[in-house]
Image 1: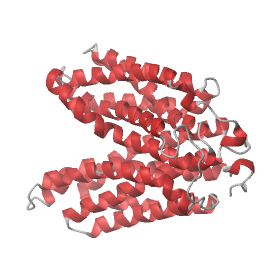
Image 2: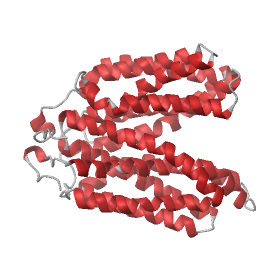
Image 3: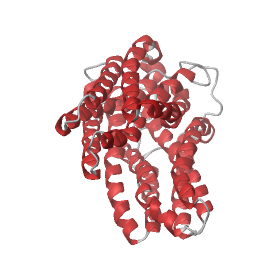
Image 4: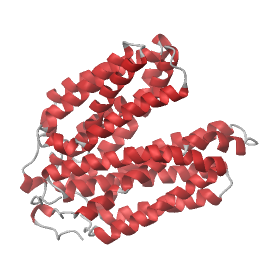
Length: 405
């Protein structure tokens, strides 16, 4: 079990409790990566319905929009209900929506259930991050932030493959993967102590008042750059003659693997560098790697450049959440993390509109060039707005540091 609350409100998590919270990463991976392999089968099954293909794709777009609103609401709900109570509500909705989707044979209801899943998934992701942010401190928090991202990313690769295997048997089977929320809830309930609801937060400010506008915009920027690349990269590769899906998939896996490696090393990196140089270096590598990839058509050189891109962005996400936590008062961390994650989810949705206009003028390579330049610009932006990520004294931001594990 966790230690009792100490000064500053921190409840230091044990190793088992941290691992329990990290089970939320694989659940998020199921939400976002298990569906695409079976979308054609779903559209085929409901082919008698007008616009069945569009509705099937809405199971993904509706999910993404719902995740934005779920993240926005999560902080306020956690303040009123408590982190753990909201977590269990989300996990129950997560499992129930999967079980219902397995039995229901109505495409419109399936789309609605995906919206419910998106709300629950994003809210529990925010609360999981907030539990680590409010109950861990210093380098221990940095280490587990990196592991939280790493575990979710690695297991997503497993879910894509498993979804293909299950989908070949029956596309409905993928929904049963959501029942993994039940053992996750049991493990979290046994290892993480309940917290008391705080009610509405007081007048304390978190780098921008009750609504953390600056933090949300930073999240929007990071999500727009990081998640938009893979939307346009396959089309660029096709245009330059790399059309084999296996070769494209290998390039994407190399980039992802490089990101996993740096995310896994995030705790070690933060023992040597402050948050600001990690942001600057991460975005500089992200932009440079992407622009180098655009400058070549050689497959090996492309793989090396995308590895640089992946390694750079691999530290940006955990650093964003860690720096945000360190710069935010304890009582507002869940809310601020919710707004920041909402911005992260909304980034690729909002970026796609202007980037599509760029594609019409100059092709997918032009959109990727824009993203590369944005990443380099973000490195400069984080220098200019570094005050927003200045750490608070530990007595204000968090409780005493527990140095084990």
